[in-house]
Image (cartoon, rainbow, N blue to C red):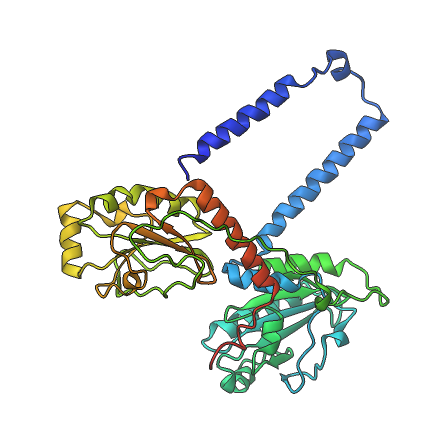
Length: 407
């Protein structure tokens, strides 16, 4: 929890300081020794390392802001050969059949849709920037990949736009799935060998990566690794908890009910692949109100890994009256609060007493149940680590999101 972390940090710093103080002292004569060739070489090495560190820091600015699932899917193929282009896909303004045809050139791939005007405009903007930074005639090669979204009118829109680059019409989404791209536009870049080097780049990132890869030489004999040879990702098992869950059915280790919310009081949470922590509570319940600060700590400690939800089965009127009576304001909650007067989730857990918390992992399995004040840092850290590990494995499996989408 946040309240504990400063103390932990303080202890860590104290331990580090103790280690430094207990280390042997360096003599003043050693410090005053004149510089020699070796020290100059050391200084030069240090400068190179500093310069390299700065470049790495700058590269972090190359990345587009993406959701976790979009970035993990897009980066799955980094370091491996570009995927095969499925047979039968139509190419507008080109005759590209396989990415192997482009070996020896830097290749920029951009997935997009002509649904709305932003897809075309963003691609035109990137094309202009790439043309200014071009390496040589025909290098780099910019390729557009139209997602299945609004693809029925894609040819008409592309004819109006006159992009002047090959655009693959990925009608079924198989190529987009192979590249880890879904409905968000993804810009990726492959080196001259045909290996994907960066994914999820901003326009600035594309230009930066283009300069880096453009300086590399092409080795015709060097074949990029195939994605099929990528090693499997080791995963961490979810911890199991044996204690009493309280006044509710024990659903640990089983699929939990889907969230059922009639109304969000203070904004809908972005759950995605986060751990879902559902606190069943009510305004009239003193222990429930007492647990709010603890739930706030959990929400603030893991903003990227945990989605906390307070769920009450009170009616709108009773809830509003309860908030007024107990002076509960939206600013008192660092997590989302929802109302479901039908108590659908609550009934699914057969909850007979509140407060009661259920924690579900990204795969929908209930991992923990009990009183909110029983949620310790150890419980949360173990669940967060396991959820991250299994998400990494899921990303490694390269989810076929377009194949699973009914259009």
